[in-house]
Each structure stands twice: as C-alpha cells, then as structure tokens.
Amino acid sequence: MKQFFLRSVTVTLMAMAPAAWADQALATAKNCMTCHMVDKKVLGPAFKEVAGKYKGDKAAVDRLATKIMKGGSGVWGTAYMPANAQVNEAEAKKLAAWVLSLN
Figure: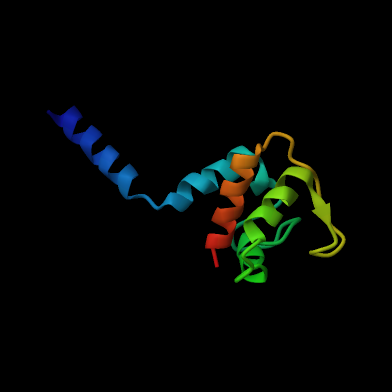
C-alpha cells in the first residue's frame, strides 16, 4: 500500500510539473546549458535575454531553430554558436519555443 501511494504521488507531481522542465531537460541533454543559462549570460546570452529580443517576432521559432541546428554569429557580439548536429528539427523547434516562453 505504501509503495502504491508513493507511485501515485510521483505520477501526480510529474503531471503537475510545468512543461518547461521537460524542455530544460532537453536543453541539458543537448548540451545547450554548457554555454547558456536561463537567467545569466555564460558564453552565450541568457535564454531570457533571447526571449526578450525576439518577443513578438512571429518567425522567431523557425529562425532560432535554424540557429540551434546550424549555428550562427554576430547577433550577440563576437561569440560564435556552433552547429548542433545532435539536435533534429523537431527538437530545435521545441527548444526554441521553450526559450521564447521564458519572456
């Protein structure tokens, strides 16, 4: 009975967790967190800065997904963002949407 209760609580808490956690987990798994943090600049800008820069831009998800996959430079200074071959298009769009939701 105790084991059943613990499993029920775990499943309930997982269902209540914000969707953003799953996307942060994806960002961690795809090594995005090596150069970025949610609210602090590391090598690249904080994800919240990115969200603010692209606020209201209807093409931002596609634009950022392309940058995630192919890399880029010049938008945030001299730092170069390398291509992320381990990220497919669906994952890149999910990551971009998550970053933009942090605004």
